[in-house]
Structure formats: structure tokens, C-alpha cells
Picture 1 (tube, helix red, strand yellow):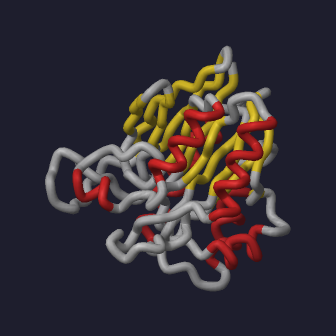
Picture 2 (picture 1 turned 180 degrees about the horizontal axis):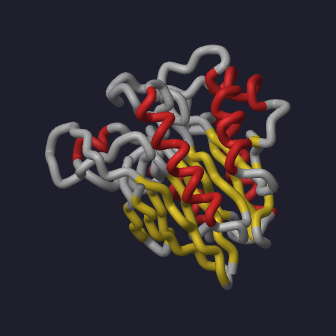
Length: 241
């Protein structure tokens, strides 16, 4: 059994967001046996030079000897993120292996092609889809890590801020027998299963979304995901901050 922590949607910008981010890292540091940490996008809000370097320095204060992997969300600047994290301990890679499981990291931070999708939506381009097919074909049932959910969940307004080509992406998962998706974006811990594919969505460390409310909203319910990898399965639980 291996533990992986997922920290998501930090929206680092003001004093409170940084304070909550450090609270999250403090929780992670309490479990010295965890296998890895996943940072699943929207790490910085309105990123500018130096922001990802600052993020890395903060993480170094709490996590000394564990692998850390990061993907971008719709609020991130992937080019700047890669540049500033290049020589850090945070890895921005396409795939890896954690606790005996193959992991593929997909970039959904690109804007949709169709303008019908509102701001905040994402898309997997041809290269990302090809990567998914390649990894899924060659490696046994990899875990997919992506910022936007592949299975739409939550309130209607959240479902609208979607992955533009989520249906096609889901069809690839089904074709190759992929069973596990780890995502952020929804600012809540939501686990859902569709046609044997289970998706684990993480809460935000910045602010929560109450999906029972029909309009956009923010709540004080924040946290991180504690993922357990055991016997070929993934389970998750929320740790509230």
C-alpha cells in the first residue's frame, strides 16, 4: 500500500492563498512514508516571473526527499512553469512510475477551439491525445493525471467549464482499459465512476465550490486529497484544512 498526496488549485496570489498552501504542505509532511506528491494545476493565479520559483522554495521547506510532480491548469502559464521549475525538485514530465503504477500526465491547460466553451475550459491537443494512446497501449492500465475532469461532475456551471474533448478522451480510456483518473478544477472532493472508469477530483487549497448551489460561489471548505494505491486500485479521501 502506498500513499500519494494531491494538492490542487492553490491559486497562489495573495497572503491567504500562500498561508493555506503551507498548511497543506504541513499536512503532507506529517506522513513521512508517503510515496509522492501530485500538484494538479491552477497552482498560480495570474502568474508572473518568479511565482513558480517561489512555489518551489516553499515546497522545499516541507518536503525534502519525496518525488513531486506538477501539471498546469487553465490559470497557469505552462511555458513559465516549465522554465522556472526546470532545475527544481518539482518534475513537469509526461509520464513516470509511482509505487509500481504507471502514471501519464496530460496537459489540459490549452484553450478550447470552439468559442462556445466559457473561460476556464480546457482542451487536449493532438499531441496530448497521441501521448495518452501511446502510454495506454504500451503500459498496463496507467493512472491518468489531468487538471480538468474527463467525466463532468458537480453543478451545471462547473460542467460547462469543461474539457472540450472529454467525450473523445473518455473513449480512449475505455478502449485501452484505463480505470483511474486523478483531476482537480472542481475545488471539491468528488469521486465518480462511469463505465468502470473512476475519477478522483481534489478540493482546492484556496477556496471551495459548493456544487449544490446553482450559481458560481466560493466557500471556506478547502483541503487536499490523500490517495491510496493498493492492489491495482486507487482510493481517495479528503483531508480538510
